[in-house]
Image (cartoon, rainbow, N blue to C red; front, side, top):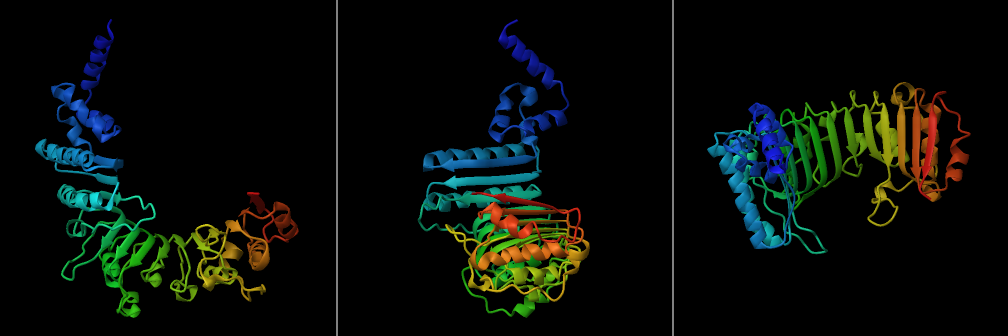
Length: 406
C-alpha cells in the first residue's frame, strides 16, 4: 500500500471522530498548523475555527512586510471564526517582539482592533506582551487598549506587559469576573489610575505587580486609598518594584505573599495576616521578625537578598544591616506553632551581613515544628556550618541543608 493511501486512510479514520474530539486535537497544534487542516476535506473546512484558544506567541518582526503578513493572518483567523458562526474565544495570547519602536507604534493600532473583536467574543483570558528589545535605547511604550478590556464582563485572567496605562476621567472600569491580574513593566500616568484599576476588580484573587511606575506624582491622600473596600477576595499577591502606593492594609485575607519591603511598604503598616501560610520576603533581620509578628499561621518562609544589577548588595540604604544583633524581646507566634519550612537565599556570612547567621540561629532556636531549614549561599560551607550546626534546635526533627555555590 502506498504512503499516500495510508495517509488518506488515517485522515479518513480521524475524520470519523466527533467534532469535540477533533477540535481538542486541533487545540494542541499551533494556530498556523490548525488553520492548514482546512484543506484536508470538506469535513475539516471550518473545524479549526472552533479552537477555543488563540495563541500568537514568540513572534518576531524585523520589517514592515513580514509584520503586514502577520496582521493579515490574525485578521483572517478572527474573521473566519465569525463567518463560521463561532462567536466565543476562551483565551487570546499575543506575544510580539518588534524590531523598532516605530513598528510597535504602528502595530498597536491593529492590536486595539483585535482586542475589540475578542472582547465581543466573550473572551475569558487575555495576555498581551508587545515589546521592543531595549538594546540600550529608550523605548516608547504603547498605550493600553483599555476602553474595551476594562469593561469586559467575561474576563477572568488579564496579563499585561510593556504598556502605558492612563485612565480617562469619565471611564468606568468594570471587571466583575476578573480573578487574576498580572502587570509587569507598566507605566501608570498617576496613582489615581492604578487605584481605579484595582477598585474595578471586586473578585480579584491573584495579583502580581512587577516594575510598576508612575509618570506623574500623585496629589491624592493615601488615606483615601486605605479606606477603599477593594481586594477583599485577594488570596495571592506578588509585589516587587512597585512605585505606586499599594494599600497593604487591604491584604489581610492573603494565603501567599511575596513582597519587596521598602520605605513605602513597611511592617508597621501591615494588617494581621490570619490566613497567610507562605511568605517570600527580602532580608533585614529586624524587619523580618517584625513581619513575622503579623503572620500567626505562617508555614513556609522564603528570604532573599535585594541585589543590584551586577553586585551582591542591598538596593536601599533603608535595609542596611544593623551592626549588632539583639535578640527580639518576643518570639513571633508562627515560630512556636506553625512554621515548617524556611529557605534563606543569597545567604551572606561576612561583615555586617553576618546578622544573617544570627537570624538563622534565632529561627532554629525558636521554631518548634520546623522540618527543613535550607540555606543557599556564596560563602564557604564550612564557615556557615561552624556557626549553625552546633546551634540548639527547638525542633528535634529539623533538617539543616546548606548549599554553597563556590
